[in-house]
Image (cartoon, rainbow, N blue to C red; front, side, top):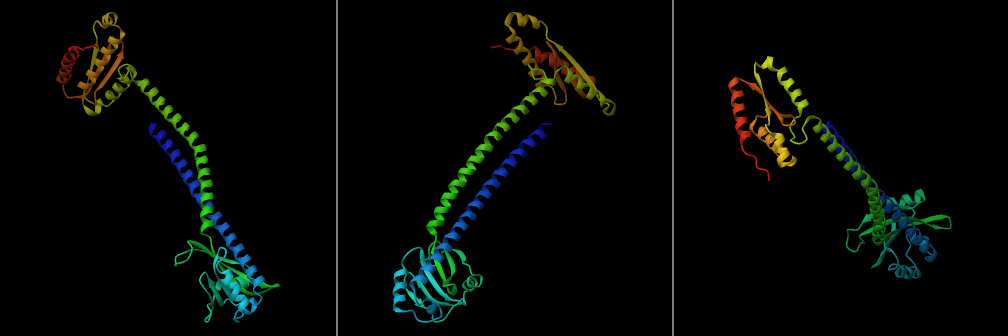
Length: 333
């Protein structure tokens, strides 16, 4: 019974821990997903605005995308624009996905040998931005950035693609801190909401288990001495007698009655009487074997049941020892 109750308690606690772990894991996934989505939107909007900015200020953008040399005005614009905003680098592709011009914070470079970009070609084909989030590793790259490929429209006609490399380190850190703080607060609140009832339930369950164990113990044991009571002694004695035919053993029953116990209570008080009864119980338990039965029948009456005896002499020897041990003085206070 007790083992089953403990197993149930631990299963419930394990379930709570698992649920809380799933909550924390799910919250972290939600934080990461939300952060990635916001960064995607941020990179897309930044790249789209940059493409519109180029289209509105570079009159020969279509010619540049077709591979022609930029005009002096366009070069001046590129020079002024390459050190501004969150875009630390950009590449212009023609409408077939081949690069024609690369600009970063240090220089502007027309491309002699074009590189094909599937992302650039895909943005033209699908008529929508293509965004790829990356973690910086090369010298001069931000810790976190996104490559956003956005079609450049002249009127309604796509003439090329701008790949804007958007520094998102600050935004990612801000988003992560904000959402992580909110997630931790949510987890703490949820843990608090579930934790307090769980702790209260656990304490009530433990108290009930202890009370049940105490009730079961008191149903079979004497309160004062902790020895088996009359009912428990009889139950165990019947069990010992039941196996006698198969073991060919013997059983000896020793009844112990304390003489003049009432006089002890009357002259020294009930505390002294209780002390004497506990002392007798402790001495009897200490001098008998584990398989023997020591119990209090009630009042000043005790019993010792010897089991598995091979000869009558063993019972006589124990009776002599009981008399000797219980005759020794007991000092109260």
